[in-house]
Image (tube, rainbow, N blue to C red; front, side, top):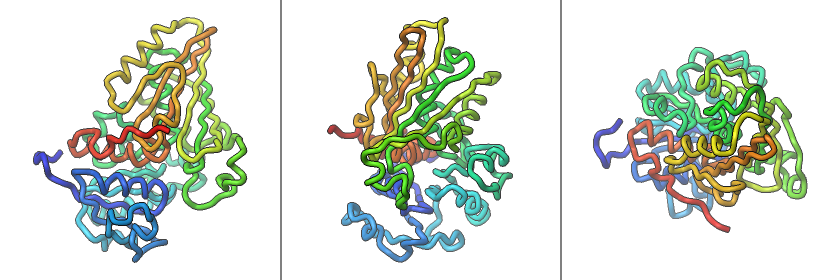
Length: 350
């Protein structure tokens, strides 16, 4: 923790050319406690960030650099990794060796799990740094704040995992899920990254709707791990179906549980007990809405209980709360800043 109230930290981003990295650049450039010292990109090395992201023209003169760990242009206090899955696990050992005192926040999935076998099963590749997997604290901010505040290395949660955990945590807290829960999350096309793919190609997606990676998405094991650690002894089965929606930003999650032995007041009180004091979580009536959190770090949640069915819902912006905004929130906690510094933007309507 920094004792000087106005002191700034030096921060760098490795892998800053994608949607998540670009969102992170934007947030850090306006953060009052951050000097953004470098942003790397193999593809755009030597080019101005603003020449690739025209909306940052007049905001920054920074130039993308090569991701050479031994030749980074500053001595950073913190490095964000906004790299694809499978890349961070090879870079982190280099960083730890070259800059042993640096803090790390990894936005990829490489260090969210502790078991290399489960990683291999869901990500389709062997983990090259299994000895470091247990060194990272899981960065679901509101629900793991104490551990994050003491951490050197943080694994930022996946976007789907963030929405799911926010919807389910109050249910777990009152033992409302007896054995299994069904979860469906609909995501916008930006969740698949900046490189064009058939599943995100606009003519294919704009008037279409489909499921994918049914019961087999790579964010599921981190959700299961989180709840097993927070609520030991529970053996809850989570059936997760991700779906592609015809919009750009946002994730809407719906979790459904059948329970005859609970009532609406217990559920509403559970959501209030967990989230009422959280700045970035809004408990709403009936249904959350993606447009109400668009471009922001806010989460909307709600719960409905009728005919013995519990329906718990959440809405997030996948690029901010589901990635870069939550990463900045974690940075704020790690360095003793005000938790909402640099991410106060409430969203927009319409």
